[in-house]
Length: 315
Image (tube, rainbow, N blue to C red):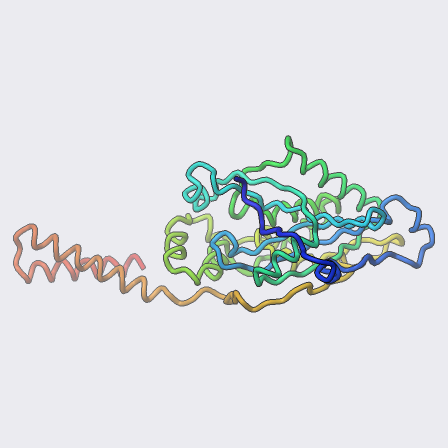
């Protein structure tokens, strides 16, 4: 069975009336907007906070297309995967999963994250009617069975970078151009701080990450994190109908806020503990080697001393 987010039906008229995805906001100043193709659409980015499971620690996001004429809102989710994939856990830890995208009722999506105790924020994008039509058409095309699959990569190609790239494509590359400044941290920095809840997972990821995880990154690359994408969307400026630059984010709303899964701003200072553990293990190894070789206590302590000096030099 393919994995799906917990999209249980919203029970009863009262739950439906919660208006989890707010009502349409149309540009009312121009009467022509009522008849222009795309004026009935509203495009927004949903950002969901982190969760408890290991695959929820980066947070999540989706693109919502709300059609006022048809009275429906679809959330396009690039985070679909199957637990039944071959070698699922190994592939997940290696970032080699096959993912896909699909559309769901936006109200049900928001309700599911609300039940899970995960924050949800909405950012309505300030797009022209023509851009809204193009965005909707692209997402519908991308959701087709022959187009929906992609090879997941933790940092280069995940649910958040797919949303980022879709927005950038509609803006003609303006998003990428405006986010070439230095990132707050490296890929390792963010991976560390987001996985402090699980020391075993934290340690495994730190051992698995290569030197590339420590390279300086741009803001564009940092948007593998949905919360960073949310942050940088606020800073983008796009031209309006008069040519004046205006914020890409027209309106921002908190649909649900939770502090159930706090995330530190920086990684913990666990290095001393790793050093202590490494010294202890290395010392035991050196002691056992000396014993196996039939050496006396002085030789064994000498082996420990040489291990300590080597460990200090490596650190």
